[in-house]
Length: 213
View (spheres, rainbow, N blue to C red):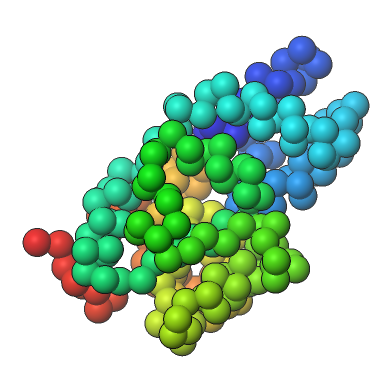
């Protein structure tokens, strides 16, 4: 809830508040598009870029509150030890990603566990999620370039799953129960190979990956 909580701190002096119901459909959306919609919804006295600057500055004050998903570090290290190539494809701007990840030390350092990281404002990303550009660019940066059908994407929102579907990749949904219920996903019409409530539940061998010892 990091983004929404900080947004509402920012909105409080304006006597405004953004609801979870309004914020939920924007999860995974490019941050500028998200800001445009929020400005429009609340009739804010800012441009989208002004809101983003204020929002990021507010978020930086609480950045160390962000925690990894349970099971995330264990899975990343397990796949790395077994030489499974990994990368990150984020719809957010590089500045946003760096702000959110800086306090994790070198966990997200390029080359340590992840071969590369693609951001929404990187060259080659013309359209953002739910379009597949971020994942396509991310996939093409591997050497050799894998068949998309052999790529497994972990996502936690509808927009990201849609983008992965369009890229022809397999998907694991880590369902954030604060935002979605399981039946919302079953009625979405999306191709989801596996739905779990935590990365602690993920069994790599289901996808032909080395199992945890």
